[in-house]
Length: 166
Image 1: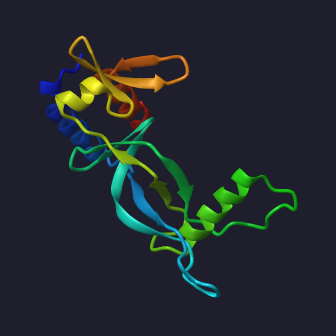
Image 2: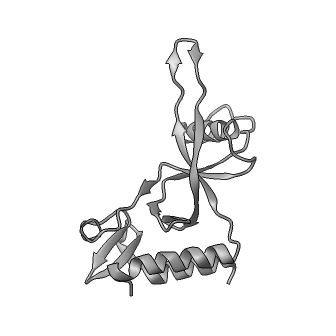
């Protein structure tokens, strides 16, 4: 069980385990919508802002920062679009197109729309994204619809094991 006092050590040991095992991290990006006037517009783009491991509903960076997962796209040129497209499909396609024009290697997964999680006691007591306190232990909401949650330490151990192929 993870208390607030245990949190820095847990995050540091998770970073070390992932790093030592050579687990691939993913890009963090900030989406920059097009801007300009009339026909003189810039294109949508992504700006690199860091790297993190995707651990289910959480992102963990190398300094031990935790983020709630936002959206994910890939830096690939979108193929031909179907004639009858959904709005969501069109949006995903435009994100892929913006990512393919940005400063990321081809095929790179880009996490965007994420939010830094406050890890202080007051924020966790109030519920910081998917993290919250229950009887002094830090829990992770894994299924918001059903209210399913698990201990953060167990959650991270399971996610790390999955990434390492254990």
